[in-house]
Image (cartoon, rainbow, N blue to C red; front, side, top):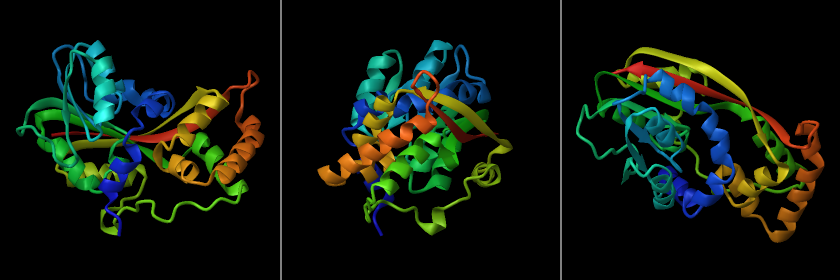
Length: 268
């Protein structure tokens, strides 16, 4: 079996800018609710786990929080540091966090737990870095995640393309249901109390070109299913995408993509 975490790092390596210009805008929708869940405000010592290009870190800093952030991809940290120059950044591979226990008032992770090989250990590490009484919150994608991925999946299928056989799969022993109950159970197992998990839905508005460019650059699993094809197959997928996109479009021609996620929170 492929090393899930090593494969995830390979997939994201060198793609920070492509993520920033496309899919990061999708992930930004949940940042306010995530920060509300942990009560982030002036003076809050906050750790942003898997910061990506720094979207949540920037939002927390704007609220007056004292932000520390980690990511496993150097390119992500470079872009995040440009966006949030007053935050402290570290390179770290989950579930290992380079901090003493009880270092933070709040720890958050926006669409990160679904990208690690050890989800339960990652939530436990987040709890360990949080002071007693502090709060932990995280988001993951529901299943199915949303219309944008459905559109890309349908284009791949319509083109008759085969997905790469070596895409990483989570060890069955680490798998958990992508439901409110299943995600909440990770928090309870980690020793968090006052646990709640709620669905979050929103409409993501983007252009067909922007949405395609992120996938074509290989961002995420769906991007790998497209970018690793032959040029001829990619052209067929693009043609299918262009044919399907109007079915997901608003009257102004932009894509209107309904998405679904889960937001879990608990107290250390």
